[in-house]
Amino acid sequence: MPLLEHHATPEALARAVAARLREEVAARAAARPVFTLALSGGRLAARLFEEAVAAERAGRTSALTAPTVHLFFADERCVPPEHPESNFALARAHLFAPLGVPAERIHRLRGEADPAAAAAQAEQELRALTATPPEALPRLDLVLLGMGEDGHVASLFPDAPAAVTESRAVYVPVEGPKPPPRRLTLTCAALAAARALWVVVSGPGKAATLAAAWQPDSPLPVARVLRAAAEVRVFTDLPPAAAEAVPRVREAAGRGA
Image (cartoon, rainbow, N blue to C red):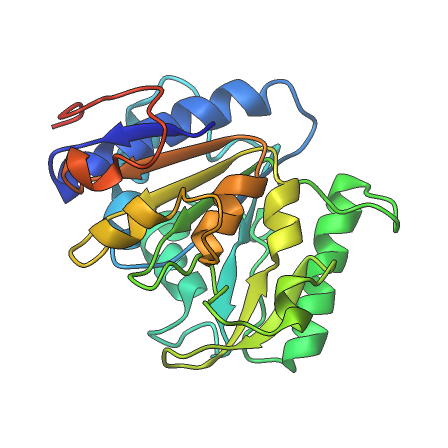
């Protein structure tokens, strides 16, 4: 059952998620030789990353910059790493560079390479780091996702072909409806295997989608993720009524404001 936290404004939402992210990584990474965190892009990402930098700098000990923490991506556009549409470029500017995260702990998706080869390389890196045998799926420790107005998460869009939705790979190339269309994404199976998923829902036009996301027969990608994952938290700045269909375990209205 997902936890749902509502916050009054996008600013409060970003601040709260960043603070919670630092706490969560610090607590979980201390118990693991390697901690894997997958990041996403989206309209709130830059603000969230900036708040994460502030939280890290204010902390007494390192969390996101701890030597056991390795940073991956939930998806990427098939563009060079310096391109303005690159999720890596966004994270580098607003998170990695300000914190001085060493390059060896950043595992970007190579959007400039052949998509199939880039997906295979990313999977190999994750498997090697987590010592996952070939017959099993690697388990990311925490995946940070956004949600689009159409219910997509990462670059898993509605009406994707079975080759994408049923894939047992970790990453796959996809053709999406939003520009730039060529992308790389974690699969549904890889997201379901993660130890924890956080879905951040912010912005107008998403209320009906969020309300529909927990319907048991919903085909939306976000609904599949909510149903399949072992541990989910949903963070939103939408009005509380917009999320009434999601079982509420915790309400944090206005916290972090």
